[in-house]
Image (cartoon, rainbow, N blue to C red; front, top):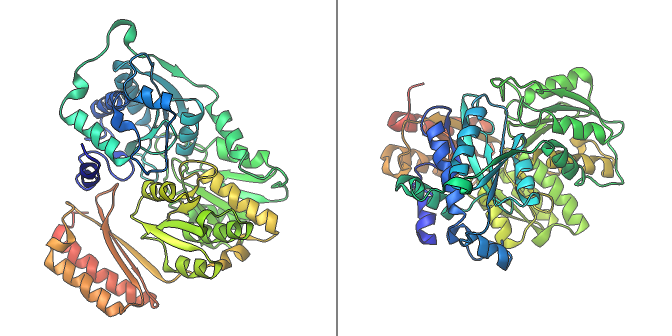
Length: 487
C-alpha cells in the first residue's frame, strides 16, 4: 500500500479512528475476537518494512533496529500492554496477549497505567511496540485499543492501514508459529514506580511544591495511584478524589470532562489549584484558585510565553488544531510566536511537530505535548509544567492565565446514524454557507465528524455569544434532519 493510498485510507477506515479502535465493549469492533486479531496484526506487522516511519516524519531508527523491523527472524519481538481501570480491560487484555503470543511475540503486562506511562515504558524497556487498552474520556461501557511504535509515538496511518488489511484479508490467520516459537507473557510489577520517577524528573530540581494545597481528580482512571503520589512527593498537600476505581465509575461525573467536581472541592477546601485528568491521564484540565476553569488553549499560551522568553520554544512556533480558540492566535502573535493548526487529533499535532522540529503543541481539550519530555500528551507532566511556572514566577494561576483572552465559542454535538459528506447534503451545506456569510469574517465556523464517536461536531466563534449559539443551532437542526440518530 503506497503512502498516498494510506493517507486516503484515513478517511475510509474500517477499524481505526483518530485514536485507535474504539467502541462499546463486547460489541463489534471492541470484542475479544477483534482484540485477538489486533494482537496478531501488531505482532505480524513488526516483520513488515512498512512499520518504519515515512521519510520526512522526523523519526529515525538505527540501522540495526531498522534491519530487525524489516523481518529479522532471529529477533524475539516483545510488545508491552497497559490499560486503564475499566471492567472490560481484563477481557481485552487477555485476548490481545493471546493474539500476540500466537504470532510468536512476547508480551509485557504493566497493568493500569496512564497512556503516557505506556509510551514511556515502551521506549525505556526497549519493547518493539506498545498497546493501551482505554477509551480515554468515554464512559466505562466503552473501551478502545491504541498502539505505539517502539519509539513511543503512535503508529503512523500507513501502519494502521496495513494492520486493517491483514485482519480483513486473513493474513493473520496464516503462518503461525508452533512449539517453542510461541510467545510468552510476563507481568511487570514496578511500572508505576518507574513512571513516577520519570515524571518527577520533568520538574525542576531547585523547585518545590511545599505550601501548595492541590486538588487532584483522577477520574477513577489509570492515574489513581501515580499522580497523587508524585504531587505529594514533591511537597504538595494533596487532596485526592476519583481514586477509588471499581471498573464502572471511570469518568463518571469526575475527571477532565467534569472539572466542576474538582472545582467544588477546591472551593470547599480553600485550595490553591486543581487538576482534573481523564481516564487514561493523557489530558489535564486546570482550575485556578478563584474557581475558574482553564482549557488547553490557555495552558499553551502560558507555556509558550515562558518558553519563548527563555529561548526554549523551538522555531518560535506552537502547533494546535482547528478547534483551538482564535484568542490563542491573538495571544501568541505579540510574543513573536507563530500558531500552526492541524486537523483534530493529538496524533496529527505530534506528526506536524516532528516534521517541523517543534517542541510545544496540543489541543483545547487538554492534550498538551511537551516533546522535550514525552512523546504523547501527558496530564501529569503538563500539571508539573504549570505548577513549575507558578512557583518560579511566584504567581497564582489566575494571574498567569491573563496572557490569553478567549473569544466566545460554542460547541454543539449531534448524534448521527451515519457520517455522510456535509457537501452531499444541500440543506446542511446551505446552512453552513449562510452562517459564514452572517459572521462576515469576524468569526470561525467548523463542522466535522468525531473521529472516535458517532457525532457531528459544530464549532462557532464570534464576538456575540448569543448570536453564534443561534447560528450553531441552525446548522445542528439541518444535520439532525439529514443524519440524526434517535436519542
